[in-house]
Length: 411
Ligand code: PMP
Image (cartoon, rainbow, N blue to C red; front, side, top):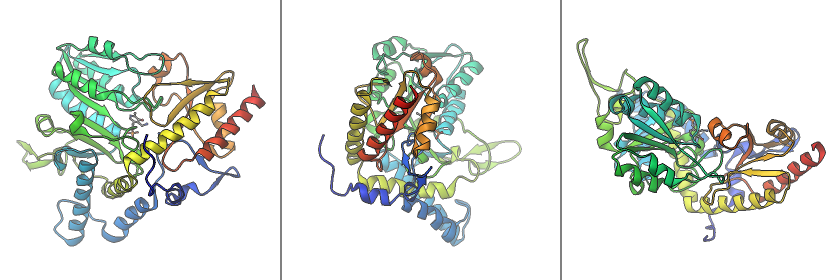
């Protein structure tokens, strides 16, 4: 891989994240739970404050100056998202409340309109619960069938098996770009093109991809792509659903209410154009506005630089953990982001998590909202470290030493 550009200065980056500079249980915080949510840089926090201090106002309907300012900032954020994922038009970007909400939106609208009895939806064995349960609910309602792409022992999708699952009844394929529990980067370009061959639409759950790897919906030809602002250094409670214009225009609205209508009478309501058709009610204005700043922050660092840096962290942590005989890595795909899941023989993952926390190290333990995946591996849960732009090799060394001392003391 190429080297890291000069502006990717780890010291400067760490300075941008106030929350990192604190002690937890008397030790400097090491935050390794970035797949759950990332920390927020000062410019994002300032954008939030700037909105509330300077121009808090409801959007789209007001004609006064503050309303116009808030509306412009909101719509500028939509354009920033459009560019960030290389969508054709800003109208193809719908603001939701998170990835979960985006997926539920597709299930409730596309599902309502296009999935019928005996139709088939394909997901994978490594999905987050938010990309499983909405489809189970839909299938139950519509008497449709849910099919699962199996994985191999490394935690990679078995593409040959996927191809066998595709039929002319397949209406939708919904898979993660990157697994939150394993870090596997799925070959979604191939999945999308194979699904399109049978006329199925494809929804990509990009929750774990948007902060780590390039996302180009045009190149991918994704029909829907969803992600959450809070995993991209932005605020909580805001998400994105990208959809191709024609598709969005062809599906019914999601929630009913203000903003999503053109005209309402008691006899009949006509709906607004996209994206507003899907944005009923007052949206999460402040957080959407601050998302633009988060995107600018990532753009300034450069996705390529982020990928290179995080790959170095991944390799460093993987090689150190592989040397510990009691540690078993769960998910060893060839193509991975900086997520490492593992179990330790004879020690419960929850106990390890608590003991690491006592040393100031924040990791995630449990099933990671992917219980069916844990079942595939025959385990209850793992310890997961997920690394981001502000983590360092030195932090990894401290973590590995802490883990070794826990293992030697408690085994
Ligand atoms: N999909 C994946 C792969 C995730 O990692 C997550 C969050 N852990 C979600 C979906 C749900 O995201 P949110 O909670 O932001 O709606």
